[in-house]
Length: 282
Image 1 (cartoon, rainbow, N blue to C red):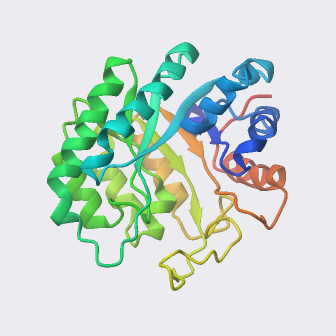
Image 2: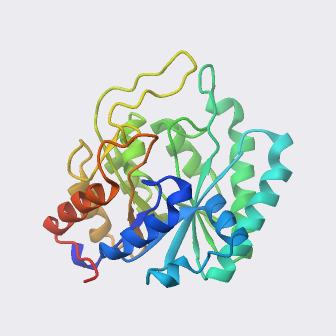
Image 3: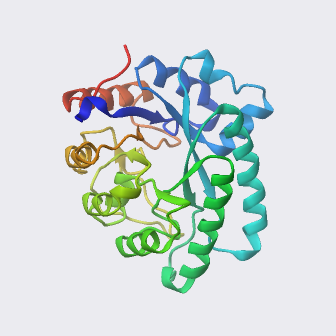
C-alpha cells in the first residue's frame, strides 16, 4: 500500500452550515472522493428536502460529525434522542461512519478523572446505539471538550469498549491540545476507523476572559495542509504502513471571516497531498 491508495475526502466545516450545498459542490469539483457534514446540518437538509445534494454533485456522504453531551447525566436522554434522529438520516443515506465528539465545555477547573466513569459509560452507550444502526462510532478527541489532552485521550481510549467505540482522531486537534499526534495515532492504529487530517499553525493557544480560544489564523488556529506544524507525512506513513482502509478527511475549520476563499484553501491542501503521492478524482 502507498499514499495513492488512501481515500481522501473533505469535511464541509470550512463553510458556514447554511452554505453546505456550496461546500458539497466545491469538494466534489476539486476531486475529493467523499464529504462529511454535521449531524445537525443533515437534519436541516432533511427538513428542507435537500438531502439529494450529494447525489446532485456526484459525491457520497462518507461520514458525519456528531457532537453530544458526554458530561451531564441530566442531558443524556436528550442527547440519545438527538443522536437517534441523526442516525435515522444516515441509514437512509447509507452512511456508515460517525465521528463523535463531546460538546464544548469550560475547561477552567475541569478534571477529566473526576468524570471519567460517566464519560466512558456514556460514550459506550452511544457507541452501542450507533452499532444498532450499522454505524461505526469513531471517537474524536477535541480541544475545549471533556477529552482533550494526551493523558485524557490515552486513558479514555484504553477504557472504552472497543467493540463499539473506535478511534477517529483529528491530528491537528491533537497537536493543538499539546500532544504529539504521531504517538497517539500509532498507539491506537489497530482501532482506527476514521481520520481528520488537519494542520495547525503552531502558535501557542490564548484564551479570552470567558475561556474561549482566540483564533490566530482565521481558521480556528488551523491552516491549509502543509502550511502548519503537524507532521503530515509521518501521519500518512503510519496509515499506509498499517494498511488503513478508512477515510482520510481533510478538515479546515471555518469562521465568521476566513482569510482566503474556501476553494483556494481546499486547493492548497489538495496540491500538498498530490505532492505526497495521494490521488484525486479527475
